[in-house]
Image (tube, rainbow, N blue to C red; front, side, top):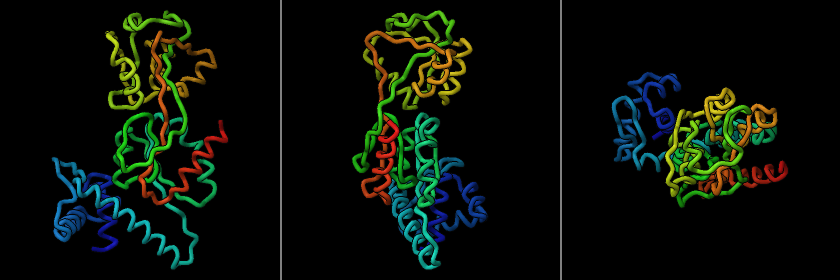
Length: 288
């Protein structure tokens, strides 16, 4: 097994598609398929499961990916050393949509400017963030709420809250009961998102019938719909703050219900760059 084999394997794992991985590697599809098959024959177990045109890592493939990433990181560092180059630490950051759209850029800008790290960013669903950290595809992850395995270190960063927002002239009171909430068209995040999970969890024990008018993967789309009078959006406060301050949106509260959640940094327990976690927490503390 060679370094090239590992690079091919990692690319296929990232794209979950032989054709796309081959294009990225400037190789032919048959070449990539053959290399994966030869690797599987050599190690004695399947690295991927295949469903129609998509492929997914097998359970052992997930574990193998973690080792492959470590080997490639170490090999790259060795190459940089032998060339006399000042090595950059390569870090893959995964973030949920809510964290990624608002907080990620200002948080990582100072680290980008140091030139010490070379970052790659993924903005994806929260459950995918956890999967990528566990498998070694990503080094640092940001999620809101959610669950994570015992092999991960989790560091709470800050509290956030969801708010109900509507246009200034929308006919909804400043405070309403759960029963009254069912009378208004709701603009919600998609099922499976961390934001939607917080909302659904807060209402799980309540007996209320909701009128869901729209579901979206984008918080910003929901804010725009609320500004145009489509209904009442449930979004993180950070997404609505500017429009609230500008007077384009107003907030409403539900009696006896809170939509607070914690943004959390997650890393594998044996992470490559554990110092980054402490630096990120310190950076956030200075901004408070």
